[in-house]
Length: 556
Ligand code: NAD
Image (cartoon, rainbow, N blue to C red):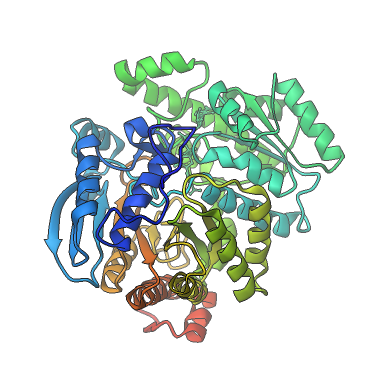
């Protein structure tokens, strides 16, 4: 039975063991579509997060997708183009059930203005990374990613602990709203600025923010006290980051870590320029988008100048994947890229071993299934400190949203081992129902994004989008259930291409075969991508993991 959803009463949380579709694979994908809306920011508009990240192009498209998933056979493949179903083809039972491409625009035309125009005409929709691919699991994924980034910084710069450290950031939206909890879990005193009082209140109501301060003085007092007592706290402040960051800097305060997760990728529907009220911005979105874009860019320039000033004074400053540096550079801040991107700065050694965000969703809706899989992870990987630490913390702090789910950083071999073991638990009845596995698009072989994932690659291959395309084709050839190619990234157009995958552990032998092929080949390709770019750790992982790498050495 679906569960009521107090946040969005019209979008119940899927669950139960009754099949509506003709098989669990189809049912699983339908439940994942229902799930991204149930945990989304504005499901009435099909928006899952990040201003325009949608689960389907429009309501007629959504209805057709649902109708098709309910009626299709296992040997058919549903084709979805930018959130609209366009065909149902006869394939075979080992082929993907759903193939999608979202927001791919030919190179020379891949610009925000072209995207907005096509979107207005109803010809395209932006899927973010997980929205259009029906893989979003609420804040949990971002909590984990942000927490792990903070902990990698703690290891590098602060002796492994953030107790007594001050993190300054902004953005309390769909993704950014996870920052206060992640910061508190990491033991820090974290201040998060957002221009929208409603967003701040929402995060306070669910306990991610301890308090919303009345003004900057009060916020800094709370942070100061917590820092001196080495006590974790998460403080929200309603204000414009482009005002607040420079004010904090002008007071001579140097936070230990500075980042930002406002929707800087979107100069029209996302970022709010300083000096403008939300009402004014909403009006200009319709009446003066060009004026709004210019104002946002100028404001982001000030925002980033303050971040650079903090960096100069010794703060650990990083871009958390919202394109703020790119926008600032276009707004005249020539040295915006002195700020490193989090992937290159902290995660690349993990990607070399295809370690990245791997997630699983209990399709039964039963939290006990996730608890059982948590135990299994601890049993299978007792020596993997990052994963065991995260699972223990997540159990304690991370609330379930929508379908009970978990995410953890697992790599080549580990993902396959876990998924096949879960499939066995489904088969034996130890779990109440089937489980779906997916991983973030921000994964070793899956994303080309020269400003996020592949910035400063060792061999200069940052902008080559062959890899995610090969990734998607490999996944189709490896029996995955859903395969998707996304483009856009922040900025909607031209910044990135990525591939996504979902596979269902339905407890069958065919399920085990699908999981084994798709997950093993997916992570193999991740290692191959980094080995090919010349990363020694990836070459070693390729040799150790038997990934089928064909080293050619120098290619000139
Ligand atoms: P969102 O649109 O849901 O929320 C953005 C928030 O920023 C809103 O609450 C808004 O009020 C606030 N805001 C806008 N301008 C502001 C300003 N000048 N000062 C203070 N607050 C301001 O977006 P989201 O889903 O939270 O995503 C945030 C950004 O992070 C996006 O750019 C997204 O693409 C990016 N992102 C990156 C990663 C990653 O790879 N690490 C993952 C997910 C999202």
